[in-house]
Length: 507
Ligand SMILES: Nc1ncnc2c1ncn2[C@@H]1O[C@H](COP(=O)(O)OP(=O)(O)O)[C@@H](O)[C@H]1O
Ligand SMILES: [Mg+2]
Image 1: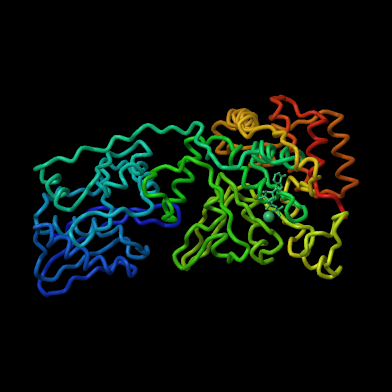
Image 2: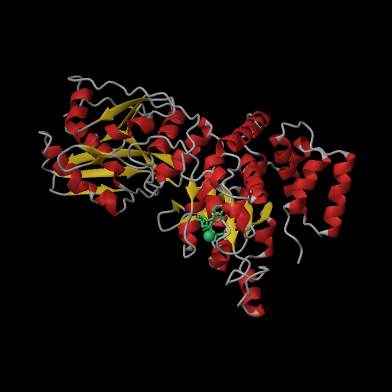
């Protein structure tokens, strides 16, 4: 009879149960069947060597390993360990306790000498294992901290195949891994950039504070050298702490994308991604033959910084529209589509024209009108409509540049941002969202009631500025954040008035 054990296959950000069955009979071949990719096929060589080099016995006859369900594509080296274990059970080198339901899960890549190497996607597997009621999860030792982030199955850190065989035969027990304490407070990066050292630009700083508080999108426009890049780089210094749920969401994405730092089981800082303007559509939104998360998903719950915004390919920028609306991106693959979360705040910076001086009172612009029109055409109306905060970053005056006066420190600004984020967390408890920018229209109705005076201002703005329905709802969300920064329960007319200031001027 074939021996059955269980492992997980990563599909997008989720993970599905896979049965591994080994059978041995006459012949001399070692076969793996059940839609394996090249890396899984190579498991044959690694598994054979790992077993032989661990003072264990590899069957001489024909060995067939079946990965089921057969229609699910198996990818990557994580099947090495389950394949080895199924062969060792089949040849009675490990006691075979047959289970219909997965009590034990195995995942890991094998080296030729039998030691285990870390794999990607462990957190996604652990979350699925918890749902399935798995009791024991055997993982490469260096993956154990990540696997134990969600309380669920016992996580057994395995160093090598021999150690696992001894454990499963009861000779030498491996102790389950107990997770270390997770502290997410005040983890925000100590960047070298502090708002205190950025002179002037109060308007842009205020807009960045609002953006950070409610996770809103923002576009900065101004001539070269006015400090747009500098301001954006300082943004991480005022971002609020991650909640544990947010940290787990981010970690799952980084783990599947194989971008989790080796010594860091949990992502503790909000991501700040700044892809270059030559970035391709796939690298920005995700995809590929085996779909991987793109920059917008790696920026989930953090910042996607697009410097020199109009220099990006227009089509690449248009790809951002749908994820900016839905907070997720669906990547197509041969069999259906895969969703990746992408709730990022877009921070973009641009010059007013290719040479940068079209609005400058002191320097002549060298661009032709057609060049300026073409430059501005790169960013479509619907994309601009999704940006809540439009801030001008003008050239600063010499006196300001020269003065030694320090601005407000990032620490103080961050304290206000954090307080307003805590208000939002409480507001949205158990709703699955964390920030004002994520509110649905229904939630806006519920949480953003306005008084008569505010309504009058809004009506005037919608009529005079010809605002779209989307812009209207976005202004309400922004007003909510501005009110939260003052810990005001009600949205007042001054909050709405400030929110309206950040809409783009109609040219
Ligand atoms: N407001 C400012 N306060 C202090 N230094 C500034 C300011 N604006 C610009 N700088 C200096 O000028 C350099 C260029 O600014 P940068 O942010 O790259 O400009 P931009 O992106 O708008 O072209 C910065 O590295 C910084 O040294
Ligand atoms: Mg710049």
